[in-house]
Image (cartoon, rainbow, N blue to C red; front, side, top):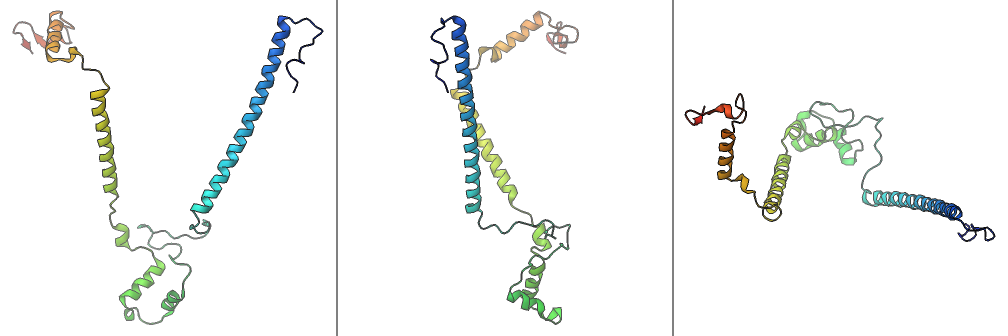
Amino acid sequence: MRSSTTLINSTEPITFFTILATSKQISQMLHLTKVCVGCLLSRRAVLALTNSGARMSSHDHHEVSNNLDVSQPMYSARVDTPLPDRPWKDVLDSTDKSLKQEKGPWTALSKEEKIALYRLKFNHTYPEMKRPSHEWKTVIGGMFIFFGITGLLVFWQCHYVYPPQPHTFGEEWQAKQIQRMLDMRINPIEGFSAQWDYKNKQWK
C-alpha cells in the first residue's frame, strides 16, 4: 500500500483538485481495509461459535443415545395408538428373555410377572396415559407471579414516576365542565345536550 505522500507528485503544483483526488484514494483504501478486517472478524466469530457449539454438544449431551432412524418403526405411547409399530424394549436382557420364553397358561403367572411382560411391550398403561397432570398448577403459579410483578411495577410507577393527576380530573371540575357543555348546547340534536331536559333541569 502506498503512503499518501507518494500519491502526490512533488514536481506538480498542489491544487485543490489534487488534494481532493488524493483524499478520495485514501478513503477508498481505508474502506477496503475496513471491509477486509470485517470479513476476517466475522469468519473467526462464526468459526468460534461453531467450535463452541460442537464442544457443548459433545460434553453436555453425552448421555443421548444414537441418532434416531426415522425410517424404522417407532414406538409411540398414545391413547389413539393401542398397538405401536414396535415394542417398548427392543434389546432384552437375560431376565426379560427368560420371562418371555416361559411357556404356560397366563393364569399361572404372578401379578409382577404379568406387569413385567406388559412392560416389555408397552411403556405406559391406559390409566397412566389418561392420568391428569399437574402442569396446570405451574401455569397458574407462573401467571400469578407475572401479575404480581406487573402490579408492583405499576404501583411503583404511579408513586414515583408519573406526575400528579391533573386538576381537571376532579369531580368538581368535571361537574363544571358538564354544566358548561349544557349551557353551550353541545350537539343539541342527537348528541350530549339532546339528553338533557332544559325545562325540568334533569336528564331525560
